[in-house]
Amino acid sequence: MSVMDKLKNLFQRADLPDETRQLYANAASPRDLVKGLETLRGRNEIDLRENEEELIGLERAIILEENSIRKGGLTPTEETIILRRIERLEKQRGNLEKQVAIYNENVNLHLNLIAKIQEMEAMRSRGVGEEEIDHLVDEVEDHVEEYKRVSIAAEGGANTVPAVDQSAERRRLEEIKKRIVGVKEEPKAPALTEPLAKKKSLES
Image: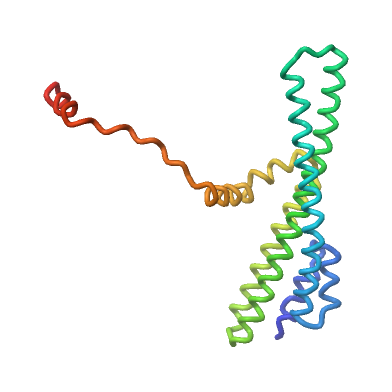
């Protein structure tokens, strides 16, 4: 059975994006499939970056408005207007967070599909057994399940987005941060000088 045959059922899953499923129908080989996935990933990456930049801008705008409230000295009307702005900005931020989560999962999904298809092709060219190649298909299905879970959560409402952020993805991001900035060691207690150590020993 060819790699394309093995991927047939996977790419017919209704929980994949329509454009991703359509790629399989138009592809004659795994290489065609990878090219199509790369194109989709690139488009999603552009949309993701645009939404991320907008989200950062909203975050900064909210912080500025909040600082105005903290400083005080506002008239009741000024305070009401600023609080209304904050409310609107927070709603925009919630909507954008959902969009960013979905685009991010789209990019990750396509990256995972590309990697596994290329790996399957490489294994087949080396004459690796069918069972091992089938195992890769199972791994791809796991990625699709995760994509489905996060997409449903993100589309379900603003209240579900923080729950997604604090899950496995948050732990992965924390690990990346630790790798970049390093882990700060706790300061060690200073060692006792020799005379002081002897004195403590005599007193005891």
